[in-house]
Image (cartoon, rainbow, N blue to C red):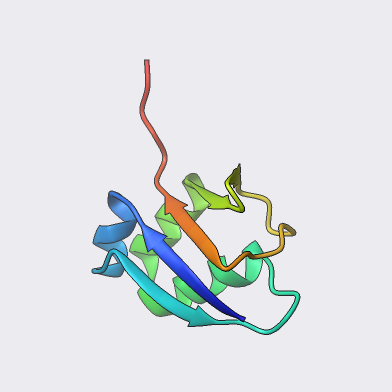
Length: 81
């Protein structure tokens, strides 16, 4: 399955791009994506995926077991108040 991964804020900085396509086998999950991103982009992406969240099928998640959809957004941690 080809997944469109979109990056925002600190994730853009870590990946040096706003979007890319990554191929995964059927049944791939968010844990697979996290490992792939860390392998590609190193410690700066590790910080993003360990403290940020992901939008998968329009639902925010950070659980490794969530199955990937065709589009996943990588969201950095948000400051708020």
